[in-house]
Image (tube, rainbow, N blue to C red):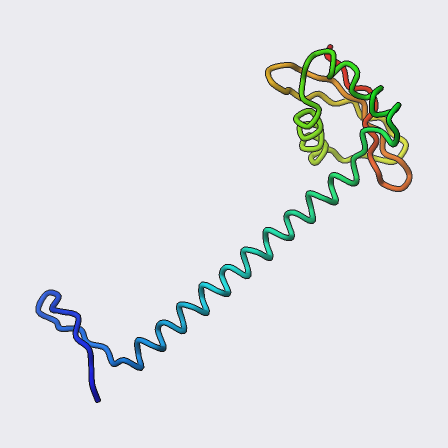
Length: 133
C-alpha cells in the first residue's frame, strides 16, 4: 500500500493513499456538479417567475393603448423599460382584486410617477395612465 506525503504540519505528517485522492476528487466533482445544477434550477425558477409576472402585467394590448399609457413618461424623457420594471416591482407587494382600481406611485430617475392599475377578470393587471404629478 503506497501513501503520498504532503509534508509535516506541527509535527504531524499527513499522508493519503492515491485511491483516497480519487474518492475525494469524485466527491468534490459531484458536489460541484450538484451545486451548479441546483443553482441553475433556482435561476431558471426565478426567470420563470419573472416571466409570469411580466405576462400578468400589461401596459396596453395594442399600439394605441401602449402609447396612451406612456405618453407622459415619454414627454418626461424617462426610459419605458425602467418605468415598467419599477411598476412591476411595486405591484408585487400589492394585493389587488378584480374590477378594483389601484393607484400607485413609483420613483424613476428621481421623478415620482403615478399610475393606474386595474385587475381584469382573468387576473391580468392592466396599467393604464402613467403620469408625472
